[in-house]
Amino acid sequence: MSFGSGDPRKRPGLFDSFRAAMTPPPLPEDDGQPIRPPRTVTVASILSIVAGLVFLFIGGVSLFTTDEQLDNAVKAYNATIAECVTDFQGIGDAVVVPQGANSDVTSRADACKQYRPLTDETISSARTQNIIISVVIVVIGLIAAVGGWFLRLGAGWSRLAVAGSVVLSIIITLLFQVSNLFTLAATLLLIVAVMLSYIGKGAVYFARLKARRRA
Image 1 (cartoon, rainbow, N blue to C red):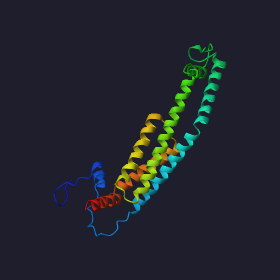
Image 2 (cartoon, rainbow, N blue to C red):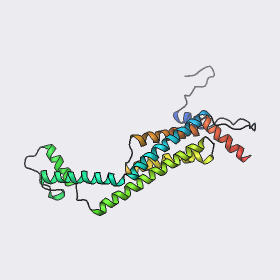
Image 3 (cartoon, rainbow, N blue to C red):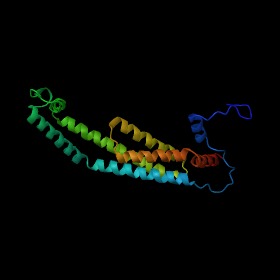
Image 4 (tube, rainbow, N blue to C red):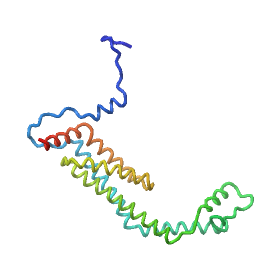
């Protein structure tokens, strides 16, 4: 369809809109006055700090309750093995499925075939893994909280720190499947904080600070 100019009007695509959003507007002339953070950066700072505190709390609690969590997991595992021994005479290759068993019983028997006795080495390995994951979560919280605190001060590295905490959170979730509602919510807050820092007024704020440092 043509309009008065004779040229067809093309609707901007998704990538065009994204590129336009990511491109900061021209910087105003530096008047020498203090550059104050816009509200978006302040909000990003608060979100990042809150998310960091959530990660710190979850990681800290997990770290200090590792032995208790492990004991409960071992008890639950051994209780399941005891049920398998009672119902199917054992676990693994020792499982005996009753003749004429229905699908529910067969499914339980198949599950019992996957169990193996716990060894001290297995328990120690699980404890070490839990400690490592907990420490990483604490580190993510520290990076997010410190980065968020310095966002409002315009530190150039603060945006990278917050973005890095998002990457670490996603990596540990994909590798170890340790996410829960709180960590997912905290990660979402960090993503919003990163967007507010890199798009629109947030991008202009950091660009102005960077230009002043270079002057």
